[in-house]
Image 1 (cartoon, rainbow, N blue to C red):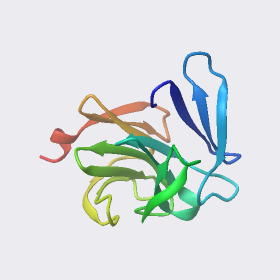
Image 2: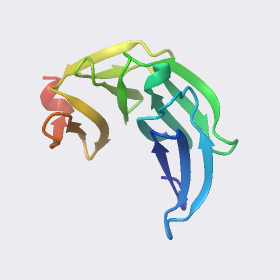
Image 3: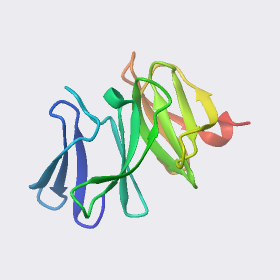
Amino acid sequence: MTGQSLWLASTWGPTIIKVNRTNGSTIATYPTAGATENGAHGLEWRDGKLWMVVPPSETIYQLDPGNDLAVLHSIPAPGARPHGLAWEGDDLWCVETDHRAIYRLNPKDGSTIDKIEIPKPHGMTRWDGCFWYCDATSGAICRLSVLDSMG
């Protein structure tokens, strides 16, 4: 979310939708970079830029919201089924459902800094010092404290 806008990813479309957060009206729609039949599976804001992960292209993109979501930078995702993003300090985290893991990535080149294995993740974000993800089998919303998992 930025200012008065909420940004949504429509996986089947595939489009990125800018919505007025006050009244829910659509402000604009944009094609999803790297998409085929389906598109983005995770959006996160960082320093006024929108970051998104797109499974069909196995890529994480940094987008310019002030320039029709032009791609500013891209890095490889850690696998073929990336499904969520989160920031912790200067590090970008990405959940990979096939690997059943959350990867800590260098946002400049996509290299892996760390990896936390978790059961059946599907989607992820970070809030209040914890990762939040959905368990793909049970549908449960799960919380993972980074400090607990990293020892």
